[in-house]
Amino acid sequence: MRTAGDIAGQYIEAVGRTDMATWSPEDWRGFIEAVCGAYVDALVEQQIAINTALSKVQGVPA
Image 1 (tube, rainbow, N blue to C red):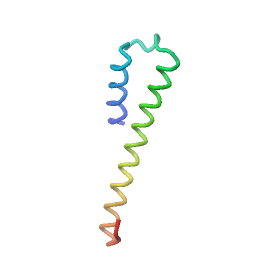
Image 2 (tube, rainbow, N blue to C red):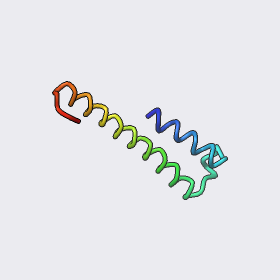
Image 3 (cartoon, rainbow, N blue to C red):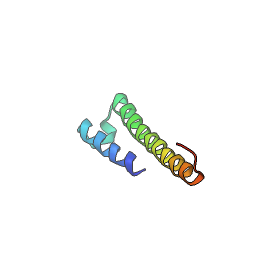
């Protein structure tokens, strides 16, 4: 969630308007895509790290 939060902040800065009530549908779509994308990317990275650690413990090549 931290990564998604960081991306959300960057997106808001890029839009240049912190009042979300003034955002267009395109602004909202981009925001949701950025936040969800960052969250999914972080989950994938976590899963890769878990799989790598598990393979080391099990002695299986990653």
